[in-house]
Image (cartoon, rainbow, N blue to C red):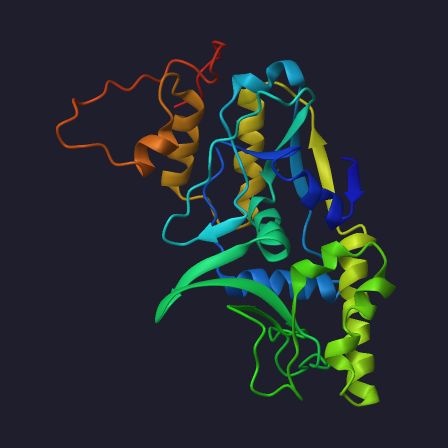
Length: 293
C-alpha cells in the first residue's frame, strides 16, 4: 500500500473544492479539547495517523450524494451541507478515513467553533506564544503547546500570554514575514520571551506550510460496495462505529429518492403524510447489489 504525503496548507486549500465527504460518513463530533490536542501533536511532531481518500472519477461524481466539510462548526446545528459539484470538471476525493482530523484542521485554521459554556460562544483557535514548550514528564497527556479556543485574544496577563490566532499563519508564505508581523506586540518583551514567540511562529509555519504532515492512501475503485466495506473497516480503529452509524451509512447509500441524513436531521410537520421510503439503489443512477444482511 503506497501512501502519498502532502502539506496541510494544500489540503486546506482543497477543502470543498477537491475534498468532500461521502454520505456514509457520520457527522463531526470532536470537542475543542480534541482539536487542541491534534494541533499540539502536529507541533510536537507526533504522528497523527494516515488518511484514506477515495478518488471518484469526474464522470461518476454525480452518482453519489456528497457533503461539504464544516468550516464554522456550531454544536447547536452540527449538520454538514450537501455539496454542489456541478461546476467541478475534474475528479474529486471523498474522505473515507480522516474526516474528524481534516475537519479539525479546517476549523482551527480557517473557521470557528460555537459551543455552550455558560452561554453560547463563537470561538477561534489561538496559540499562546509566551508558553515555553516544555513537556510534562509526569503527565504525557498534558499539552506541550498552549492551544486554546477563545472568543478573542485579550489577556489580563500580557507578560505571560500573547494569544496568536492560528489561522493567521496561512497569510504568510515566508516564515520570516509571519515573525515580522509580531514585532509590534512583542517589542516590550525581554529577549527570552521574544525568542520563544519567534520560535513558536516559525514552528507553526513549518508544520502548516512545509512539513509533509498528511499521509494518505488513494483508493481508486469505483465499486461502491467495496468502498463501503473499506470505510467500515478503516473507521473501526478510531471512535468505534455504533450500529446506528452503520445503519445510517447503509441507508444513506441505498436510498434513491430520499436523503437519509436529511430525513433524520430535518423534522417534518406532523400534518405531512408519511413518506414511503425506498432503498433500491446504492447510487442516484445505477443499480448495484445490496449488502449482505
